Amino acid sequence: MNILNKIKEKIKKLIPAWFTLKRKKKPQAASKTSAARPDKEIPSFQETVVADTKFSHPEALAASRSINKELPNLYDQDRIVLQVRDPRWVHTYWELRSQTIGALKSRLGDDFSRARKVLRVYDVTSIIFNGSNANNFFDIQINDFANSWYIDTGHPGRSFCVELGLMLPDGRFITILRSNVVQTPLEGPSWITDEEWMIPEDMFARLYGMGFGLGRSSPVGGAWQERIKQGLFSSGLSSSPVRKELKERSFWMKVDCELIVYGATEPDAKVTVQGKPVNLRRDGTFTLRFWLPDGKQYIPVKAVSGDKLEERTITPIVNRETK
Image (cartoon, rainbow, N blue to C red; front, side, top):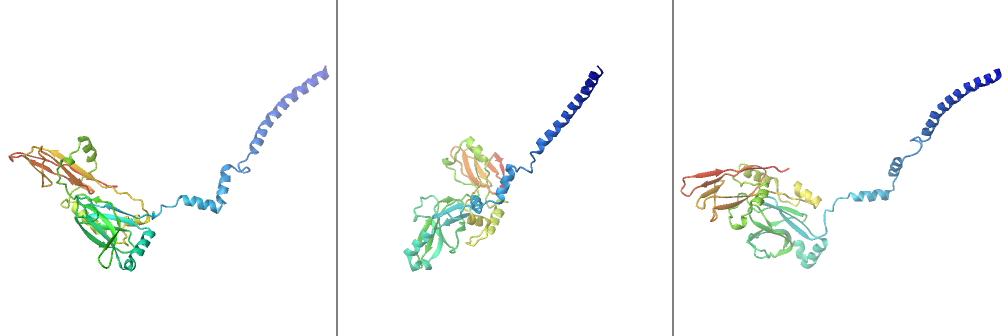
C-alpha cells in the first residue's frame, strides 16, 4: 500500500507540470509562426512594382511621356478665323499649309517674292457678301511671320469679314483665305425697335442675367475702352498674352455679355434711355440691346406723358464681374 501511495503521489505531481509545460509551448509556436512571415524577408507586390519602375526600359518611358504631349500648334489646314474682341476691335488668326504657299509661288512666279502680305477688312453690314459687294474696305499690311492680328475697325455695331491675300506690284489683290463674318456689339443701346426684337417674358428672364453695357459716355465705359486700345496693338511679333497663347496652342474660348432691355408705356409718351430718345412702336413698346463691360452700370429709363404733365423714371442697375 505504501508503494501504491507513493506512485499516486508522483503521478499527481507530474500531471500539473505536463499541463503547465504545454501551455508555455503554445505561445512560442505562435510567435514562431508570425516570425516565419516577416515583411522584410518576403518582398510585397508594392515593393516589386517600385523596383520595376526604377529599372524600367527607355521604350516604356518614351511611351508614357508621349501620352502627356501637348496639342499641336498647327493642324495642317488652310483656315482663317475672325472673332470679336469688343465693339471696336476684332482679332483674326490663320494657318497656311506649305503646299498652298508652294502653289502660290508657282502661280505668281517672280511676283510672289515682290508681293506684300495684306489683310483686307470688309464692312459687310446688312448684305450677303460675295467678295465684291462690300459697303467699304481697308487694307492692313502685315509681315511675313505673322499668323494673327488685332484690328481696330472703328465702327461698333457693324458686320465684318477679313481676307488674307497678296498685293502684287501692279496693284492686283490675290485672295488666299476668307474668314467668317462677325458683328461687333454696340457701345450703347440699339435704337432698332422693330418686331424681331420682341421676346417672351421667360426668355428675357434668362437673358437678364447676362448683363448690359454702356457706351463711351459711361463713367466706366470710356476709360475702360481707352485702356483696351492702349493695351492692344497689331503686330506679327506682338507680345500680347492672348496672341502668345494662340501661337502656342490653337485651343481658345471667348465669352462676352449683352443685355436686352424692353418696356412699354403710352404710345404718345416720350421715352429716353440714358438721356437719348427711344422710338416707340405703335403699341407703346420698345426694345434695346446693350453691350456689357465689367463694372456697375446704371440705365435710367424716363417716360414723359404726351401732355407733359406726368413722368416716370425707372433705373435698372446691373453689375458685371468677369473671373
